[in-house]
Length: 380
Length: 117
Image (cartoon, each protein chain N blue to C red):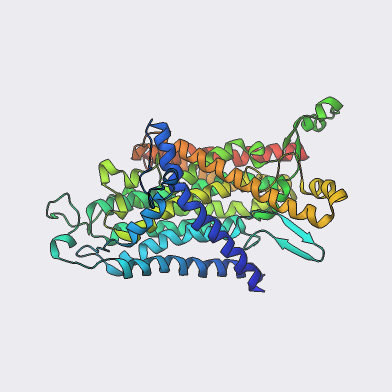
């Protein structure tokens, strides 16, 4: 039985960690180069072949692997060694519950395109994400360095603050879909939303020509404010610019991972990029419909194509189309984060904390109460 | 029920193997040339005069306390949200009563200057 889980897990690790993460470091370089009117990374080559600089991620890994691993004097060796592991692991294992496809049946066998599908899927992502805080605070404290300590303190305060908003900003989505299970959430979004359906609530009837005005039933259309708050909180959790006060180069040199070198630094670096993919995956799953193709639900594809090409072929095609849709949404969300990262300057630390406690937290509580009132009024 | 955990256990094991493998390869390939100047904590070339092992600003404790309160609140919201439609208006008024003291607490904290940086 675990064979199936092992295959799915290896697939995720291969696609996300080994496939997408190195390409994202390249995309980040090229995106920043594009936005700053530069050429960007293009020098790494094998026998004169540069492939647009795509060899740079490989060169990075090789270089990080062959550097000396320096532990500063007076550092707590054990904590210093564990910190990068604890920072990098959560980002990798959060992928276990993100569905990259629906539930398909080939004859008698049913296949779920997700490594683990618990009822508490989203809760698991938050729980795992909060472990990453320990990585930052341990690295900062164990290094026996003033800059590291300041960075670690800032990182922990920022991460726990935004965790509260992160948790509260998606409660609205739980209320709409009435579940925390990610696969069920995507299923619920694989349909359409009647924009003028609210007329019926007030006792009227929707005219036929207005009934055609529809949107995909994505979370973002139910919870636009929740989407913005969730994305902001997720990006702040990740500590990348513009929320990078814990590792601001000009003030704290590198913050909590200042005393790290070689592959241990590489793990911190890598975890940020994997986290970018996790954010894109979670946001596109709960707000942008995950694998769901807008205006074309699974039954329509299988019924439509299956009628003249056979059920099995249609299901297979459906798997591929859904996976490609999910990847497309993933890449768009990654690209959005890159754009924000290179557009906005770094926020001052008091601005970061004010945004959380005085802006997002009251807003997210208000969002829950307003969502509840509206839903009860509409559904009666 | 336990089947939910199989996938998570598998990805946890694969993740640990992957991360430890990367560090292991690094230990094999990386050079080892230690001397005391290199091991000094980085202070832009100066000797470290203030030890980092000392007291730090009380604000960070304040944030931690606030975090505990509001994160527990968030945890109470989750099961409520999952069965929201069944509880209907009763559940709505109940959560309003539950949220009000916390909102007042946040307002008090705000006015007292506990959220200033």
